[in-house]
Amino acid sequence: MINIRIGNGYDIHQLSTNRRLILGGIEIPHELGLLGHSDADVLTHAIMDAMLGALSLGDIGLYFPPSDPQWAGADSLVLLSKVNQLISDRGWQIGNIDSVVVAERPKLKPHISAMRDRLGQVLQISSDRVGIKATTNEQLDAVGREEGIAAHAVVLLIAS
Image (cartoon, rainbow, N blue to C red):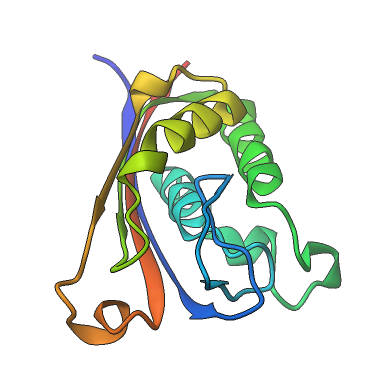
């Protein structure tokens, strides 16, 4: 029997002026960016929470608290690499990731391939194991009113 674990993650950040929009480690041209203590990359944050959750290791706030000034403006890909090392140190590796970004704008389809490639590089897995989908909230709730962007992720870990 293969030893596997599944974790899910979720994140949401408010859209704001004078911020870059970073999703999956890629800067996406848009007049608004995500507000947060780090670069506020909701996709990467959801993936990290799913990885940690699969092993019952808490969430990213435990490892990178927003109250700690060393994480101010942090590149979420650096944090993802640290979480990946935590997983690896415990004898696990990523089987695959499935995720969805929920945003009214901008259109994300042209950027999905680059996001998959970048996340795969950081996680040291092939991009065909990184699933990213994009959808809107059909103008419902805060995301639908373009007040924020959310992401959901599921990660399958396999004992190495």
